[in-house]
Length: 256
Image (cartoon, rainbow, N blue to C red; front, side):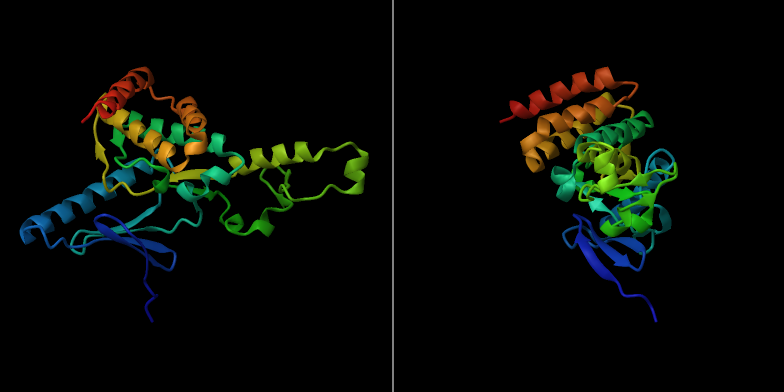
């Protein structure tokens, strides 16, 4: 018996399908295009996205590429069991650290001349390194880490002996936040609009996209969140890219 396929998202040009522990991105036909052109475009974009995914995967965390089929216009990738940042960032206690990580990740792909093309929190997933902890709150309580220390969650209560030793809940919470940050990875997904470019302009546009996404989706703290992103964004061309970002924003501001 073949495993059941479930559509989990509708992208602009593709269906995102879950099949067991695999995600299939299936580019669908567009009736408004000339059939021959549609066939060529879907084939080229499938090939291009797979190559970008493979290249980026050597530098940062992305879904593992399993297979590419240019005939069916499908890419098979591993399923990431994590949290989409667009839906969870605002409530995460370590959200500023996470955005710093996003900055680090973006700088790494930019230094390799990879432009994501749709750099928003909707295309970022926070997944824990230890998969057994994902979506299992109980598993994160008093679980030994690699360094032998215990991870204590925010809702854990202090024992009598801990209170007697003067251990403060605030200290435990801060330790928990640091451990949580260390045990998770920011994964970039959906390179469907991505391409290779050395141009400062293209990298600045990527930054403009994430800045806009923060303003639109995470507006309460968007300035602090982008500031954290900038802190982590240690690209070799950072100064030039940030200067170009100002010009990109000015063009958008005065466009009629």
